Amino acid sequence: MVTQPQIIPSQPRTTLRVTLDNDNVLEGPIGTPVGDFLEVAHAMQPYEAPLMGAIVDGHLRELSYALQRDAAIEPVLLNSSDGGRIYRRTLVFLMTTAASELWPGCRVSVRYAVPDGGYYCTRLDADPFTEAELEQLADRMREIVASDDPISKRTVPLEEAAALFAERHEDDKVRLLEQRSRQHLTLYTLRGWSDYYYGYMLPSTGHLHLFRLIDVEKGFILQYPRRESVNELLTLEAYNKLSQVFNQADDWLRRMDVEDVGRLNRIVKDQNRIHELILVAEALHEQHIAQIAHDISQKHQHQGVRLVLIAGPSSSGKTTFAKRLAIQLLAHGLRPFTLELDNYFVDRERTPRDEDGDYNFEALEAINLPLFNEQLLRLIRGQTVTLPRFDFLTGKSLPGRQARLQENQLIVIEGIHGLNPRLVPQIPEEMIYRVYVSALTQLNIDGHNRVPTTDVRLLRRIVRDADHRGYSATQTLERWGSVRRGEKENIFPYQENADAMFNSALVYELAALRPLAEPLLLQVEPNTPPHIEAKRLLSFLGWVQPLLPTQLEMVPDTSLLREFVGHSSLEGYHPLIGSDDPADDRNGV
Image (cartoon, rainbow, N blue to C red):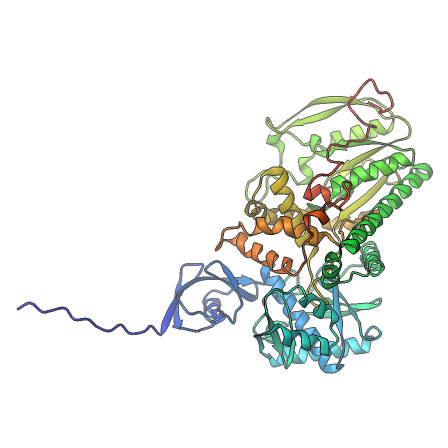
């Protein structure tokens, strides 16, 4: 007799499985926080840095994220970009919570990042903290860390959030919420203190053992660990020249009355005000370039400066700056002669390689330094030289055009190694003028939510790569990590060697970049590493009121921003001095 099959009612699953990045599999109850699984994995094989978050099926998640189904997970550590941001964001929340407990009504603003790992902060509601008050604040922060208090989050109606911030006189957040299209907002809460942050947090304060408060002029520094030093705080160096740039930026923001994104949003909505803001921001840029050109002129006249070196990280606007500086130098009666450092590459087989075995074109040793210095000296002496021309197809250095300078000509060179003393060891220091160009400050979302200048440069590059090079946002995002490593090795350590620093940031540029960058970022394929970064960039761009096409046309065609958004009148410009026309004896060629 054949047994008839029977239908057995399925039992609901009560557990789930997670696959770790080392292919190990763990099982636990449905609803278990992803951090619990990663802590078990850490016990089996310790991580190289503290645990900050998780990647769950290609999405960045908090450690408190409750898993509801099987998933592939991997840890996000403090020595990663996302891990560092989670730590710093939670640390700011800890600081503002502690300050509100000690001094009800106290309002602390995070202004900008300083090298070696720290935020420069100011107190808005009263005079700067005294050293004793800073120590009191640090002690309270340590107490909260020791108690490992939980950090929770909840979604509230927008009206409730706006009322909360208005009651606390946090006008920056009230203005910001005017841009909010959704009718709700996610707030984080620690010890009864609630606030908004546009990124993820740690689940509790016990993770924040490493920080320091340092008293500085008119404010203080909240120091945090760097990615390359997750278990100790680096010694903060004095960055006097960089501090001057920060002070200048604050002065400019006060003059324009635009100190946060909420204020910018209101101005963008007013056709006349945004036009005026663009004109004033551009005028401040031109004024500073003119000051640098004047300083070069004076040092050329009095101490014999003949070489101007311009350096800066990717997408800082070096090319447009160099051309606008050349125009200002011409206005001072000086004749700039431009040299391209790329033409001094050594032959391909002599190019050093990186740790992955790939050619490292950003290494200083990729430049033929003996030839470069020899020809600089001969040019300065007024001798004729045959410049090299590097053929990138064959990887060979070939003879190029001949050049000879006249007595009052300056050599202007743009390149990543311009601030490195090893680039021109044979040139007397009194003959050299170095300029560092970068987006050194950026308009913040509000007093507690920073927009890193690195993000602004990345947005610039995404827009420019798409328009000029045909690269997708995905391709640019995939290359960005390598670009950043090169900057940290070859540029940032030497920035204080500059005779002048030019802050290429423009107060209105996020509004100009959003309508161009947003469609490109939305094309990044989900569940990929670039998508995590694209989603983060889209998150803060959503708070910015975009410029309309008619408003984007208000940006002058000589603006540094045009290097990235297109239609720059300087794109094909080269100073007449230094042209290739041998019949023109003014150009020294």
